[in-house]
Amino acid sequence: MKLDPENILKVRALTKSVQLEDKTLELLQPLDLTVNVGDTLAIVGSSGSGKTTLLSLLAGLDLPSSGEVYLKSNALHQFNEEQRSQVRANHVGFIFQQFLLINSLTALENVMLPAELANLSDAQQRGKDLLAQVGLSERADHYPSQLSGGEQQRVAIARAFISQPDILFADEPTGNLDTKTGQHIADLLFELNQKQGTTLVLVTHDHKLASRCQRQVEMDSGVLTEKVIKHQASEDITTVEKVG
Ligand SMILES: Nc1ncnc2c1ncn2[C@@H]1O[C@H](COP(=O)(O)OP(=O)(O)OP(=O)(O)O)[C@@H](O)[C@H]1O
Ligand SMILES: [Mg+2]
Image 1: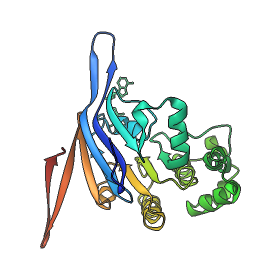
Image 2: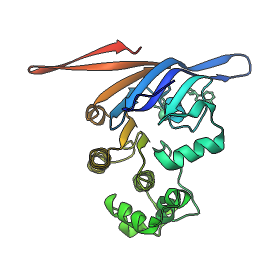
Image 3: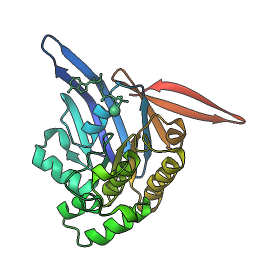
Image 4: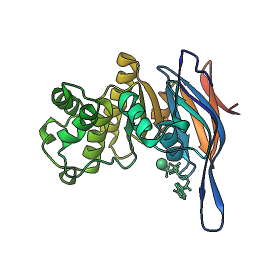
């Protein structure tokens, strides 16, 4: 499959199923999705509907059961773990729902790690700058166990920014933050999108955050639908249409 120059991500007939003892569980029904460079896309949907599963496949963290995932013309579905990790190091930032910080590393060391893996020269300075941006300069030498949930989330966000990814996947980036901090983090995400052209793909339960994105898709029991948002005179009318 060929990507048009404006596409950064293209997915065709993607499915994911897992084999349980006595039956197969279909986590994702065949889905298509195309995301353009610089797009902001929100994935919404109820708990257990398959949002994290989809994000993992889009970012090359996991392999689909069938179908195709192209990220900047890299055929992720045909790549082995090493090839996928190379693509992730060069192009992808990921903010996990569970943060996944390394407990034996300080906040600053956690933030610097992807830059070191990508052999960027100024990892330490960039790490410090990013910690300052998320309001954690004073916490640079603290270990994850010494940080609150919201502080850990902010370290995870700084870490996702450091290698200046082409595309950033964020799974509930403001889920554990108070309204003010959440707003600030959201502002940072959209600033990155504006200033660096970073494509944003966000999973969120927060309607306000979702509505700041150009596009919204909804996951329901593994089925993805595009929400077509039509703005009319004085009121917003939202209708839902099936993708593909
Ligand atoms: N490895 C697995 N084995 C069996 N079931 C799984 C596996 N991974 C995910 N699931 C199931 O797949 C469904 C989708 O999970 P997923 O984590 O993608 O949901 P989600 O939309 O991100 O939910 P939440 O909003 O709660 O984070 C859930 O029912 C989950 O229990
Ligand atoms: Mg999830």
